[in-house]
Length: 636
Image (cartoon, rainbow, N blue to C red):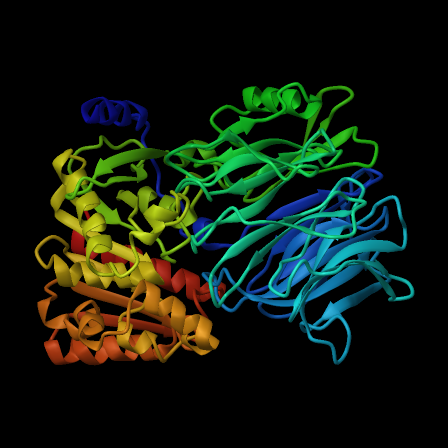
């Protein structure tokens, strides 16, 4: 089986000669990251990436000219776009300090008219009502047929509430109280009535599901988890039958599967489960009914739960029109005649289109990165390897375009997180940059990664620097054994936890790697318990760290690169941000002090940045040095 995989990779790598693409083509931000069509189908709202912030632009679909634009300040990033009516777009804004900061802090909900004349903050700074105990608000529905009202969730101490909010009078009407004091915001049926809520007790770590018919007053409690403290419940959307909804859960198996919950009886029926990976997001039709679900065992796949729905049929047609691509539906017009969707792949950063459902015609809109030529990009192929203890691991291999998969210089790129995130198939600018410069790249979803079920994720707890690190090593050895990589030209590069895995790899395997690049990485597990935003989260943060890295000082030091630099033989390049709150400078300082003492050959780049560089020149400086560092140590 492995031989067949390698032969197919050799064939698919092609023999087309590649050219050196300007580095800036990979570092500059996307033109558009998200778009949404107005209910009347006349306007388009788009999120554009700027340097350290996002800009929302409204475009006239008739001539594709901008009507207005708005930014929200430094480090402010726009999340969801929701039209409230034909003229007003709603935006959720978060504050993110750093390119790798994926958590962020809720900043507010803003409303903006298409012409830019009336723009205001509906909720700002974590409080919807001055002096309240509200710490966050999210939009449930823009109610496009109601010009003045929207549906919102308020996250309060004591549970989440659902309100109908009048944007003119700024008054709100409660539609649902919390199911219990730990419950999240209720999910709504097609009539915008609360029907499902989930609750997580942070003290006992127990999870419950609450449900009710839309017209019922009291919540019914469903305890599917029992005493299991690692159960996930998510709302999977409404079904065609108003008495049934979809639930995503792993209460009966390690991976998250799809279930139907009967709101009359409280019975749960399993629809589908993939034994390898979790089911993720639902696909919905204009009637807000779920028609399918997305999963990614290697390439993206769709589980259809309503194959006869017109959108399901249209989606399958789009997959034929855009083979080897992922199609994502953004939104629909009020009359359900037009649909905006995004097409992307491993070589396509993203293109937005409109589908006229009445004429079955596709019209191109805008590209995410119009300067990228897909024919010049390198393909990302799923791989499967077996770790030294028999655990099956999955990941991706990207080969330089036009190069035979034989004796190539290799970069092993462990992802950040590490618990929750995973590497996925899709366009990745830094992977493409390294491939364009002649490097094969291996990304492995080591144990502890998300997306492969709760047991796989938990198998990384208390295994930092040990079995988790062995998985990275085994992926490296796999590439060497298959003849893909030249064993004398292998380097590690990773950011955040990936930076930890990079330096720990140099410690554990001093003769395997010629160099290591640590980017905003964790290097001192002992300091991680006292320095950084996880440690600053009080009891919750401490409990999390107790579960994943432990609190024994001797073990923390044994598994920390900063206390074991005397074992490092490879050259080291480190980059960090002075304003990083996720992984503060204490981590870099601890490692650098130790590297000096041990006489390791290292260099450091520090910029006035957060958790990952955002400034254009800083990104160019970092990736320029990254490439030259690779060239010096394992280059051709």
